[in-house]
Image (cartoon, rainbow over all chains, first blue to last red; front, side, top):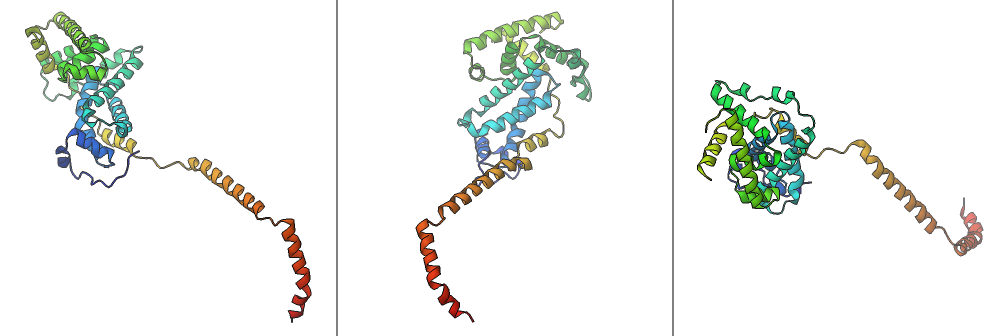
Length: 196
Length: 92
């Protein structure tokens, strides 16, 4: 799949830090064997955080793998390297949406039981953990469309225009979904006794 | 954003659950899956059969093309008859 051009491989992670996203993508497209590793390491935390907020922890590793395999397959055809970020988010959301569709009919308590959030904190701050759980459950109460816009805008800090490009919807629809998502989440937090 | 939105977003950012770390082998698993896999042996069978078939066909076709015409056969027989005994005289 990759054109094995005569490209010097990136020797260290430090070297990859000097590359812009577009330059790193270009090196991948030119057949740099280390390029994709650094691309993965640079974007994995963001992809993973988005997937986690949209889909939970149950299939997180598998979903992360699916995203990066789709990226790897699609990279040779990506012409506008400067839009890599938008393209990556689109793939991430497609993978998340596919997963949501698969799970829509078989949501069980098992998902709640296998959440790993509180276990990984060394010195638990119970109030913090409680609020994290409230936010997690609050996000789950939203529809997938509303949750997606809220996560991308309020948690990932993406501008509304970029979200409209990622989702292929007008900016007005993004604003509308954001408004309703925030209102629903605010209501949920109030029901849980959270005062903002 | 109004003040209510600001407060909500600040709360969400502060308490948004962070993703658990990936399993230790995930990166290696993904990178392994992106490497080109060696072709299984059975996948070589169709091309091998095709190459053999084409070679046979070409061989038979060329054999047919190089078959001497009746005129050439007659000339050859006449030459052999004319020179048969002269060749025999040369034998010890």
